[in-house]
Image 1 (tube, one colour):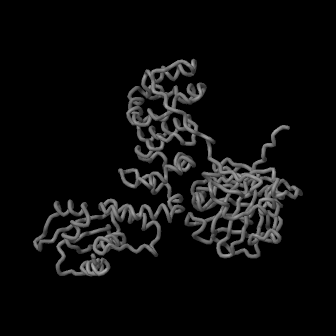
Image 2: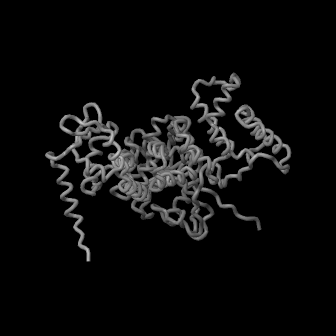
Image 3: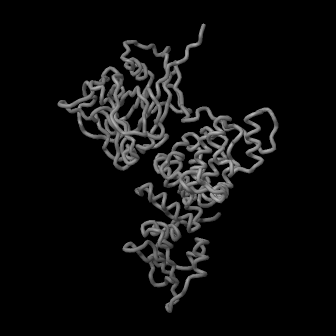
Length: 504
């Protein structure tokens, strides 16, 4: 029988960390006014971290036989957690914010503390998926610097496959690492038209060569050669033979000099004689069910049914029937077993994230949508119907007389409130500014229903609003009994689609 006393061992080593008498290493972290020094023991550092083992080999020793290691890129707060882990094998993140946990994972990986890094990576994916989606750009670009974080890479690549605009239409797309872009281009299930992928690749390549003339018609052979060299790993991943011929002439031909001569000849031959064999490698077509955004359909008669194996988090089939009876000012009372519409899930906060910009990225261009929100604290269900297409390119009020806002109270449709638009000229307000899209989501009327967050997370601050001003109102009546602002538990956006009835 073996007796193990790990708790006492951990406690003793943790106390050793506070022993200033025998230390022989000083580690200086952070920078400027935040610089802080920690004392440690070389024998502990060497055996707990291969990184410190190598650093100590090269560190200089002062007259007191103490070695100094400087790490300005690690904050004092993070390093204190790491040092406690090195000595005691314990990390307590119970009251730690998610950004700190993420930074802890990155720094632990840098210090070659694989056990800790992998544990934190799994924790973030399983417990903080919403935060990872919200901070997509921050995390995605960093994890592709090396061969680590394979689970996170898969997590993000799966998102990109479903919602490619999150990366391709982001402000900092052109700062994406080459390795990250290549990993995306390799996907057979990337839901983007091939010509758009070509456009994105060209855009990325040009951004890496800032000395290129703005007009490609003015480019020299050297300019094309520079772009070709930049894109040498990306160009073979384009599915050229699945791009329509007329688009080839418009989009690809201006850059034919960056393609191999044989490839260009084969592309031209294929556009003229599709059945004739070519010499160049022909990659398979990507699997695209929808070139824009994939949809998740709730079908009848099982409304709200399942969405990718999950039930709707907010509404039930009675709600669906109630909402449909309001659309188009209909007086029809639908039977729950025979509703002639489909609810197509465009976005769910708990799946796709609560950043306001996620709304504008994923809902842009979709018309006939209904926003459904569960209010934190009261669990009221409120929302609004927009018959127009959401437009993330231009700010301003939008006109319609078919929109409405509503409250389903706490799920009891007997107490529901319907409030139709009163001032059709200002039925909705769209935000085209990228700055406003970081804080503002959908807005109906004069703030009679709006989603907003100043920390870019609808669940984190009480900035959502159902405000009703009796002196100036754009919808018929208030949908809440209070003008207090609120945060949300979750929200969903559905596209309402008329079911196709087969001809008899």
